[in-house]
Length: 273
Image (cartoon, rainbow, N blue to C red; front, side, top):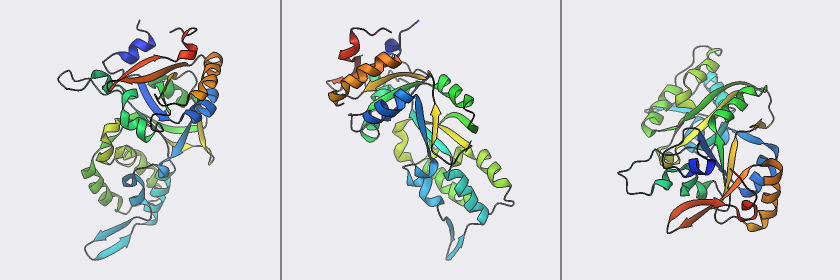
């Protein structure tokens, strides 16, 4: 059986690994010690293609402008209140490509480090997809959720979607069903500008609370990868967390533009895989 480090360094895509980038402080102070992930609301996503055109949506038909029906507004609310957590995956390795194979790994996506990993000062949390989904299924506050699904990046579908969403829904009772039946367009579709993220999402459509949504992920966290610019003043906290939680910590270093993983120095002597 391959070790965790061998799996992370393997050129082939690992179907069970999913990666979440965040700040170092949030990971060390909240996520890892509490074994919890916060699921945000869909209305707070960063892609305006997903959010803004559905807020107070209107239909423009030539010189005529009409507002959507009340049911359309309800659909906006239901969709906006869905709870979302975003991850990325390994990209399948193409031996004919000129790039180094390690750049296909989810933890080595430099854009993700820049955009979500605090410009390489943050962390990449590596989760087991299967155990993460099992933890979500066991949460009693979650009434309905979709299994993790890859996002499609398609601007043409967005243009068509705006016309579909402008149609009047026949009955208010159909709005929730409409959301579930059109999940691929309403919850798993993004602007093509984001396509290099290789994003996958966990989506909760019914959460039995209006408060923040925190999901206990149990043993789903495989390891924490530290960005190469992370503040070493946090090393004592990392050492303590490793001892208390047994979470493995790795440093992601770069040499001549190529990423490689190594043990975090302060805990290397006592770490085992």
